[in-house]
Length: 313
Image (tube, rainbow, N blue to C red; front, side, top):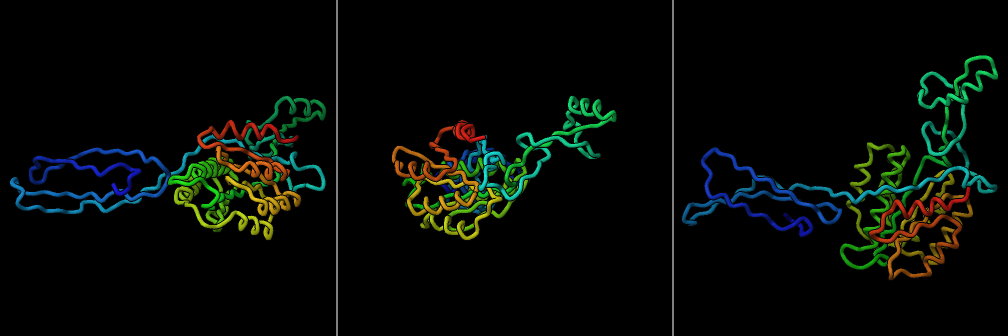
């Protein structure tokens, strides 16, 4: 092993091995933290019975392994009803084949999933018109099928230590949210203070690639305000944005308030500890967007469901 989080170096004594014979030994390890590690090399050392001579050979070179962050079930959904009051109206809203909230019904067309047929409604429509009429259910996509996850990597605002309690909780939250939206078929983008990490991945097949990039993520010496400045220049109202941070200062809060006033769909996730600045909660509450308070170690699903249930309908 080459890293303490993977365990110590293992020495396997082989007292005797005949020429051409094989020796098999199984060894397992459980990494204690997500990241990218080097495992190996596998080295064989042998000598004569008296230890007068020794030989050494590398059998297997070091191998890189990627340990993904923990992924938990999490609920996050923005639907059109939340933003339908003028002047904050989404640019478009359209039905989604197998979506999240009821959108309406339409006539069956060849190729539709028969399981989406609403038989009671079809019977009533057929009786009223006198012809056979099959109706299928459609769900509401929401304001968009694009999700932008922004992870605050500023070293100054995260808890000290290696690993950092708040930073690992933020990475775990980003991993869970991204995996959920990828499973739902959304396009997921990942940004940090230093720039874009993942560009519009879509579909469950890209889940491993997304988690690979999160496994490599480290803290930086850049403020979250840099991300807010980029959002002011290129903000889109057909994008659901999630910001994950342990601290919200006045400058960043002012920029986010402007984005909310423009109609940007924003979810703010605050990673809270006993040492958190209470002014961050006050600033977050004044933005007018949904706010989630994540406590390191607490189940994410329960936390997000409490906030999701409070959305206005």
